[in-house]
Image 1 (tube, helix red, strand yellow):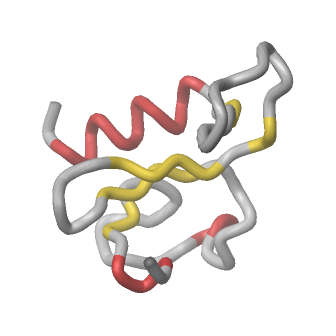
Image 2 (image 1 turned 180 degrees about the vertical axis):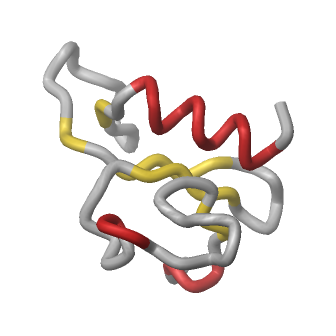
Length: 72
């Protein structure tokens, strides 16, 4: 799946402008067409996840921004 197919929930203002994270180099939360989420963040080594899974770490502020974007 290409990034262009995702709805970016964080790092954009109400006009769709990217600000400092506009180039995709910051922690972000995206929504897929099927309603699931893709999270971009720093790789975490908190524990070893099962095969085929990975861990990322993002700031609380990014999750709060995603919740606001969804109206939650």
